[in-house]
Image (cartoon, rainbow, N blue to C red; front, side, top):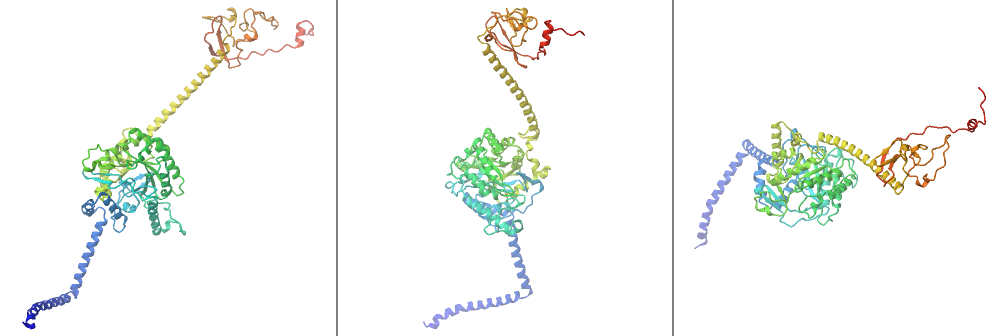
Length: 618
């Protein structure tokens, strides 16, 4: 076969291809000609506009925390991951300003609240444990939280407990964690807090003094440490696992280092995942810790000191909660957060992970936390707010907690289940309920105590204060009476000691002035006036006229037989039964009257009376 014949089929095969390319070129030329005119330009403009509008709509939908995109798409995908990995992913997303969603709603006046005497736009807070190292502070504020608490943070970085350590209890709307204070330490938290202030100073230079070389800006005066009006930032302090159990240094260092950048510093003594930590909730130990913390806080040299709050668990008994209240009142702490996670499991849990070791949070915790708030609230004065935390997932939960006395509430597990739109959804539900009933959040706080006496009800306090004053006056009178009785008893003993072993001759009944007693005549030894008959023993001659006394007879008592001399004015009248054994001493208060003044006769008067001198005739 010749080469030409061999390649003929190949050439024939290429002929249709060439024809086809010719047709494509022709159509392309026609299309280019059709789009190069005014109609083609308009078509391209419409397509570009639709594409940009779709992208903008998608971004707007993404950035709105209320969008179904997050609830129906993002959250189911995140739940496919390990619980701790999904937790970390959420922190990374909220830490990037260009990708994190934001709350597009507006907080109504019915949501206005107050905490530590500071106004906040709404009562919904993020509990500690979600953002442990302060990497997503502004992301959480952007979601609509009025109060954000970061931590717990320990002085030195520590890895926490071994993995796995975070478990979902989906059937129970709950979770169990045994993180064990995994923390990057004070240094990382301080860097995050300072970075926020530095970035804010660059965008608001007029609020800061002129910077100097190497200076580190502090939050400006006139603004909360959150750097957002109507919002508060709290830092939760924990303790390193290797720190001595009886040392408060970890908390003191945290207050000193991080306090200038926080509106509130929270002392965490209730985590169940650090050995020995819950022992710090005892009365004496807690009082010493809180006192030390408050003293250190007072040394911070910033305009506006951070408030101090303590976080306790609902696992405490009523007596133990009373000890907490006592420690809070005496130490000067400004607030209490109730409650941390619980170690109880007899709560009707259904999930397979319910037997895991660690702290339980979520819906099953709510009744325990609510009861703890009801127990603790009456034990604190109105100036010390209680923050309700534990199982808050709905408007009903939040308002019920407020009626029990909580000034604000915090979310944690429900945020993980409902997604990033949870704060706005919860606020909308609360607003709808409050507006429907014509009430506000502030009016609901402590409403359950309206028909009964609250522990620190002002009228009750006034009533009890008056009762205590009257009781103190009665006690004072009783003490004075007791003191007088003791003085009288002491005097009786002294008199008995003076009279013991001594006897006095019994006087005539006529010389006693008619005083007689059933056991024999009584001689008023102490009260008799000198020269009176009752003052002279029997057998003693009466004094001669002219004021001269006869010499004492042999029967007269010697000076050593003298029992008791007459007392001075205001003395004690002592009567002693004579002629028998020493009987009981009778003590009477008598009023002593001074003897009348008798002038001593002069020598001239004596001579006239003796006839030695005569008076001249009148």
